[in-house]
Amino acid sequence: MEWWEKEIDEIANDSLHGATYLTKKSIELVKKASFNELPLILPKLKNAQPFMASIYNFASFIEKNLENFSSTLCDKWWIEFEKANELIVQKAAPLLRGKRILTHSHSSLVHKALLEAKDVQVLCTESRPKNEGRVLAQQLLQNGIDVTLIIDAAAATLIKEVDAVVFGADGIGSFGLVHKVGSFPIALAAYEMQVPLMSLCPKQKIWPSDYALPKEERNPQELHFPKAINIYFDITPSKYITKIIN
Image (cartoon, rainbow, N blue to C red; front, side, top):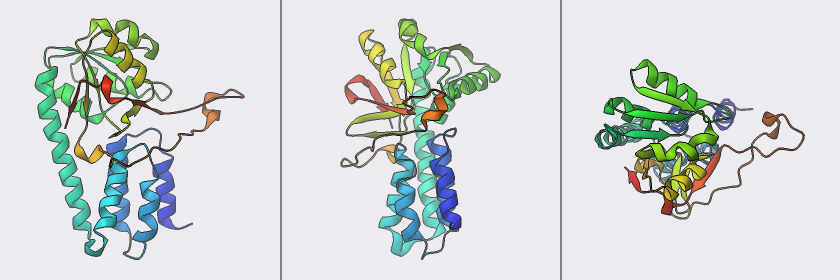
């Protein structure tokens, strides 16, 4: 196995970290590669996390600019990504300030926007099975944010108590918003209760219009039952999204 195959496997099998972290890891991998290795690396990298648009878009960008490849090209893409994220935080924070917010999973953008807003009340779902929402809740608590942790199944019941639902995004395509599994039922509840739903999503997380999501298959043994279906993501159709901040 080549060194880069091992690193791509690590990215593909990482179920703990979010899209921003894994995109940065993908960029560092590409920067280490030789020019002759890139035609082998990039197609595999595009498919390593098919539900995370930023990795796909970064690898596609390098493919299109392969003749002019340099580590500076990678750095330029990342800097533009970071600038887009920071702009979203600055746009979102005033919209969240003074509001009661429900969020699901652990979006680094949502995290930063809530800290920037400061004066917010937050309901965080646990976000099972990995419980990354619990991690977000703990981090917000440590920074003085008024935060309450709830079980995932309680989100629909409690949604009438919030002013808005705020998600990050693993990607947005013609099919809708890809986010942590459980997002779609929360979106349905928000739509029914007329609670606005916002997604914080930079342009680097928007797939090309012809991108097709593969069928998601995760290790069923994680559920410790003889017959199980295990997925990490779901799709929320665009009709249920009130606003995309990008």
